[in-house]
Image (cartoon, rainbow, N blue to C red):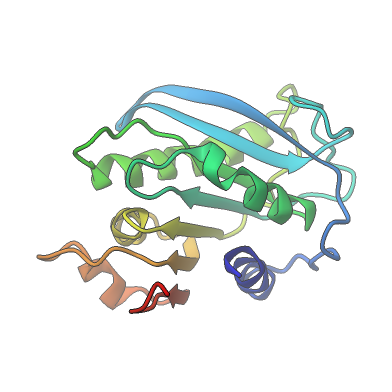
Amino acid sequence: LFMPLLAVLLALSTSVEAAEPGTYTVSSWDTAIPGTEAGTVWFKIHYPAVADTYGADADPTDGPFPVVAFMHGYLGSAWMYAEAADTLASMGAVVVNLDIETGLSIDTTRMALGTQAMLWWVDDNSRDPEHWLAGMSDGGDWAVGAHSMGGVALAELVGLEPRVQTIVGYMPYEPDGEQWLPYSTFTGTALMLAGTDAG
């Protein structure tokens, strides 16, 4: 349910016509950005590609594409969301899937800063004609999804980064205190999916 809804919101929030689900061949690559405010940011990137093998060349033929980020939950990892990220990439998006090491004590500020760094990394490298991501990002507003504890980091992210204009929280954790305050001034498109009964 999460990724189709994110895809719908993504299509509504961008000027790019959404491709039919599953149209694009998708590859992925694990990489890291050292030296950011969040330390080293590890993530998996999913993208339209020339082949469905790991690390295949990106395919900008039908691009540029909107860029989407996803933040995992408590004790989560990028591999847990890889299938959903591949599905969204197959619809015509570049998806960066956070794999930051947070340990038992979650640092949601580090998650937010790491996600911001990932998004800018895609845009910056997309403008470099020598980079393997050349021409892949449309340079527009960003969509970000988050699961559980990532929903707290998502609130911090919208307070940090004005280009994040579409957000989806999937069972977002509701913290004590003021961590959710940035949501109160968010003017983009938002969807929060939650429930009270797991049965």
